[in-house]
Each structure stands twice: as C-alpha cells, then as structure tokens.
Length: 500
Image 1 (cartoon, one colour):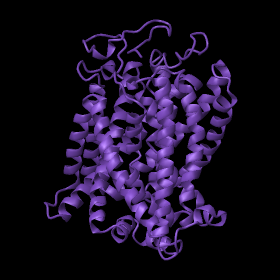
Image 2 (image 1 turned 180 degrees about the vertical axis):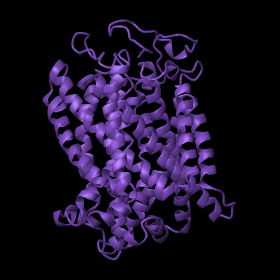
Image 3 (image 1 turned 60 degrees about the vertical axis):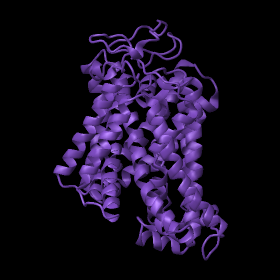
Image 4 (image 1 turned 45 degrees about the vertical axis):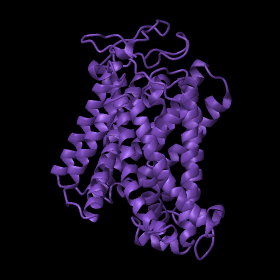
C-alpha cells in the first residue's frame, strides 16, 4: 500500500515500513503482527457480540419472526454467508491490500465501485460502532444505578468507553486481542452454562424443542423477518481480511479465521436460541419474548441456573458490548489506515507507530469520529437505545449486507476476467449462490428499513438514500481524485489484473 501511488506489483517494499513515521515520507507503510487464526477469530467474533445477540436479537427474532422455528434461521444465514466466505477467502491471496471490501470490489468491478464501497464501509462501521456506544452508555449507567451507584447521563459512560477503546486501539493489536479473548470467553461461557442447564433439565414444560427441524414451524409467522434479524447477528465476522497485514501468514490465516469465525457464530447462535425456546416451550416462548424481549434471557438464567448467574450475565452484557466496540474500533481504524495509504484520505492516516506498529493516527481519527457522533446524539437529546442504537444499527445492517453482495459480484467478475482461480466452486458457483442469497436478504432489509429505524418511514428512506449516495459517490471521487486507490487491482500477476 502506498500514500498516493504504488510501485508496480513486482517491486519490492520495505520490511521495516511499520516503524517509519517520519514526516513527508510517502513510501508504503504496513502494520506488523503475528496474529494466528485464533487471535483474529477472537476479534471478529467479539464484534458480533454473541451475548448481546442472544439477549437482545433472539427474543425479537422469535417474537417478530417465525416463533419457535427461529433457531433454523441461523442455519440458513450461516449457509448464505458460507457461500460468501468461499469467494471472499479465494480472493484473499490475490488482493494484498488490507482494505477488505473496498479492495475486493475495486479489484473486481473497478475504481469507481471500489471507492463507493469504501465510503459505504466507512458509514457502516462508523454507525455500527456508534450504535454500540449508545447502548453501552445506557447499560453501564443502568447497572451502576441498579447497584446503588450515582445516576449519571449515558453519554458520560460512553465517553469513558470511548477513551478506553481509543487507548487500546492506539497500542499494538496483540493487546486488543488479549483483552477481547478474555471478554469473549467470559460472555460465551455464561451462555453455554445456561444452555447446559436447560439441556440437562430436559427443557421446560414441553421438553426440548424440535420446532427448528419442522418445515411448518420454520416457515410459520414471518420467516423473512426472522432471517433478517438472524443475519444481522453475524455482522463483524466479515472483517477478518482487514487484519491481513498483522496476520502470521495472511494467505492461510485469513481464510482459516473466516471459516472458523463463521462456524463458531452459526453453531453458537443456533444452539443457544434453541435452548431459549426449549426453556419456555414452543408455545409460551413467543408470548414471553413479545412481553419482555429485553429480559427473557436473564429471566431464563435466573430460573435455570440461579440469581448469581443472572447477575453475572447482566455484567457480561456490558462487557460484551465493550468487546464489540473495541473490535469495531480496530476494524474502522484499519479502514482509515488503508484509505490513507491508497491516497483516498490524507496520507497521515496511513502512518504506523514506531513502537507499536499500529495505525495510531487512524485510531485517533476513529476515536474523534466516534466522539463527535456521540456528542451530536447527546446534544440532540436522543434516547441511547430506542434512537441512537436502533437508527445507527439499521443503517449499518443494510450497508454491510450491501458490501457483502458487491464483494460476491466482484469475486465472480475478477476470476472470470483474470483466470487466476479456475476452480468452479470457489470462483463461480459459491459466490454466485452467495450473491443470490444476499440479494434476497438485502431486499428484506430495504423493505423493512423503517422497522430497523424504529418504525420511522422518513428515517428509513433517509438511510437508504445516504447509502445509495455514498456508493454513487465512488464514481465522483474517482473523477476528482484520479490518483487515489490506483493500486487496488495490483492483484496476482502484474499482467493479469486490470489497472483502475
């Protein structure tokens, strides 16, 4: 990666680039690290916030979606995303840039779509991070007040979380990896304990549920809405490629981490949502989820494991959100870093720290952007959950699914044009199936965007227009910045990939 223009693909680059932050240096800067598949999995699975999904999204998916058959939606979502992952990982060895979505889209579809994907990615990750910042500020405040502490505005707690995430993001990536590893094990562990107790007791009054295996139950209610909520729970797993510069062996580590993260998330969500259904019964779980969507999982833990487990789960709910915030901070910082190195953003964003080999400037930019967004939300008097979280998460869900769809299309076009990978399954069949599945999901998301935005049609339309304008803005940016991101297609043999 380079600040304005890159050397030819065959030209050597400096191994010591990560440590050079001298002013005016326009040579490539790369991040450094020895992350294995496990470390990357910790970061991207933490971004998916497993406990938050189980405690927050699952009850809504059951109540508004297809009831007791909802756990099957995680299987369907996992299959669709598996098709996406096959093409996504096949592309990894041919696109050496750590820009993930926008690099892949640029390599396959051209510089305009690639820059449009970059803008959509920035909006998507800024908004998803902002959504979690709003939620965690409210939750910490509620927890502290509930245990007899002071009752403070949500934005004060959010500011504290912003500062902590900023410090960790500024440091070497392995520090964040260790923190996320501890938090992730804790939040996954408490849910698995709940699952084990439910199974050991043979479920609730109706026994262990088999609804997710029966087509009539899976297709009951609104399965489309169920699939929409299910696939939103996977957001974050797709960010594995953004850590390629810090991976031990990118060509092997990134694909392994992608498949491993997807498998862990899909199995965990399916089993845990099935346990919740089993704990209450196929009939009762729908009514209970509708009546108390925010408390049904805590109530289940209290009933099956005990009050102490419910208290621990309440605390781990907050740490789950912090893990998601830190993960999205790291992803967004690396997008800013990559865009700085390809001339889309000022070159300073592409600097790496002398000691930490981290995207320190990009991390600071990420912190400032998050702080400004939260300050605007607080000044506007927005509710941190019903408005900040709901609105921003709605924008992010549509944006990231759109990016996945564009990536699938880019994979097919790239390999048809270059012939770098002639395996039909990896280069054509799987990404095409992923394209079809994600297109259907995107239609569902767009059709229900007002629902995702708290029921406001005006906000739903506004969010759709914002993302469409960002995507179209890529072509405008390509014209205004003719040298920006010209290296995005430096993939594979120099004569195999077109220059954009």
